Length: 213
Image 1 (cartoon, rainbow, N blue to C red):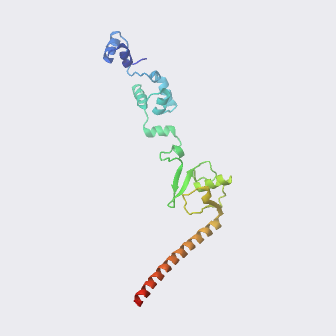
Image 2 (image 1 turned 90 degrees about the vertical axis):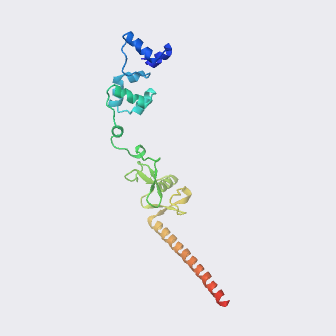
Image 3 (image 1 turned 90 degrees about the horizontal axis):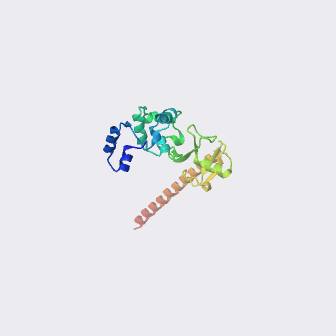
């Protein structure tokens, strides 16, 4: 099952010389040869590709060859090849979700305009329809050793919703969470008002100085 190239190398001649010798000795030349002998077995190749639904990449890994070489053998043996979309349908008959999705980014994504981080954890009892859970809730659950109740909220102490370090998170009730953010907004408004008043005092002082001059 060696190729004409291998025989030529051993005989220290050209591939053409080997082919002429094969013809002269009435040895039938294979339409497609390979140093990967198993790929010349049409029944085996058909079983792996058609019946088991393996891709050219997966078959290539089995025989330590290349996808292109496997594809060439499929074509040479008249085994109909699949398009990329057809191959994905065979491999993922129920669709590509989670880590099998084409846009998979390691299981994390940004949620909404505020920048919250979600983690793909489909086995979580409170995962959404896509299998994602807010990362800050997962961090707190690991810290507490239990699942958070839906009525419990997670508050970011420094107000950075992407900072999900355990020390930056605290469990609060829904009403407590609303009160905290309401109080923080009032404090921000007071700080803003103080800044405005200070600027106004500086401006008034400047006008007095000009009046005295």
